[in-house]
Image 1 (tube, helix red, strand yellow):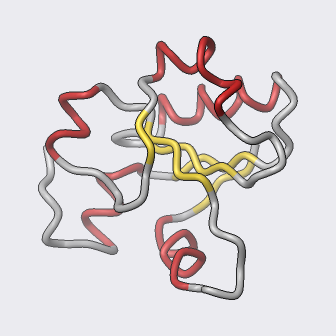
Image 2 (spheres, rainbow, N blue to C red; image 1 turned 180 degrees about the vertical axis):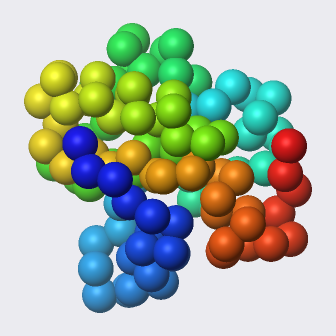
Image 3 (tube, rainbow, N blue to C red; image 1 turned 135 degrees about the vertical axis):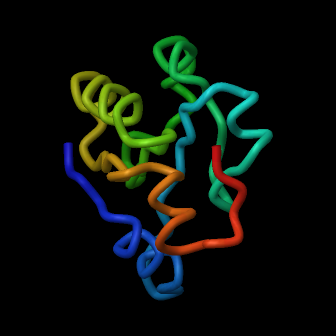
Length: 107
């Protein structure tokens, strides 16, 4: 599993020449209702084992949570399941709100 900093992800998302990653938000529903990174898809952490077949194993996946702990666990799980290009967003949406999108609601 690779780690990606929020600034690196922002640059990646802004680069139209590069294939866009699948942004997997593994937080709880109530957290996603408060804020989320635009374009992210929500699958709560506890449902990932049952729904991981919805993810394309050939696509780069960035896993997101609040601070980076849950997303790291999910990223490691996906790697064990054979997903080759999985990234954990270091600092999660909290870091994104602080460094990339200061107007984002925080909790």
